[in-house]
Length: 88
Length: 416
Image 1 (spheres, each protein chain N blue to C red):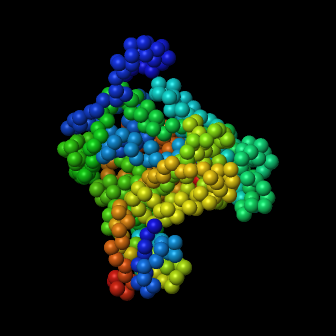
Image 2: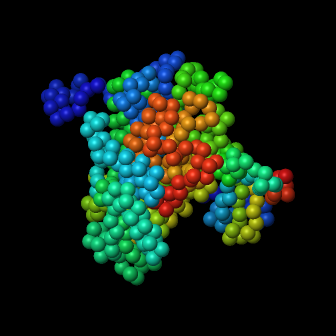
Image 3: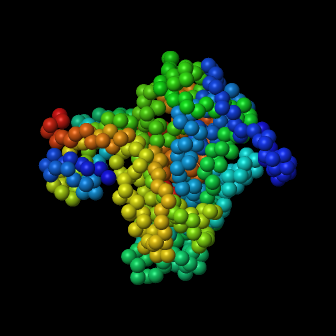
């Protein structure tokens, strides 16, 4: 079980949250200009890092807000959490 | 290779079992090979075996970071079936199932393949319609599949709670009689022994740390036991596929998750087939030793940890107690997890890459075990001819660019 540090509600058990995959994948600014390769990269390709990983979580059963968690994918150690405003 | 047979067992038994030799050599890595396969799991060892056996390529090494068979080949729930929906999947899994049917004889190694039948149960009208569609698709592809009523299921598995008054009543199901289970460790050991006998070097404790290329071609691998040159490299590393691919600058559409399984104390035989329910996320069978083997869905977050979340265990046990009230007081002996490499369309990637000579066999996700023989067979063909066999052509990496995905979520995503 993970203890997820929601930036608004504090640390809570992971069953209150929904995992939202890798962070930092921006929506294409000009979708019409994308090639098939760029679409594939946006939709499907992931870094899937072993170790330090930036990822999105939603506090579904709490404040219902999305935020970014940094976690080690081997040890599951939580290295920090931030709101989108903080991280960009 | 010592041939295993009843006379050889008696002969050596009379001599006190003193002259058995190891089933395979502990090979030292040579500086160069024609083909290097990374990952001594089921798929990697099967690839090496079929390369040597069918294509005459014997200057082959299989490199393994840890120990042979220590990854997902030893961590799955050992289920074998071929009842997939789409033609591409049906063809490769059915081809694999046919190889399973002769595998113990082929390898002279008892993989204990037991075709005890495989039952998928449904708990909603929509699930029944989906299963009926899949049975139709299976029959058109020559795969044995039957639609069963609740009464028929009740006769087949009397300990299954088929009362209409449960939270998720069993409305019916499908049966693949040729499906079943095999002893997963024996599959790795059998392929290792047979490949070794044909001259393949199996090198354990040899981690690949880098992939060297020159003008778009793979040239060698950096490993913890020195540099190994090879013109053709096959990466068959399951959960670590993205890590290895990134060494060659390749991104994959794969996310790695823990998939957990559990085993109970042994009981007297109570039911024959494998029972799977996608709706309540559980699959269960009883081994020859009497233990119940249970599996569930993946942990949601991307992770390479080999423990898994306890919540998944609570979920799977709740489902088991609902379906099989008779098991409610059975004690669990062990729990473990493997790292599974999940593709967005729940289908594998058996393909070349933008780097010439570098091939991938990955993305089997939660259900690669059943495909072990067929996967090795087609990947050996792909490495030997530097192009895919018709059976694995649809499973290319560029399907994520062309959009020709093979959506097997219904047949694959939960139930294994």
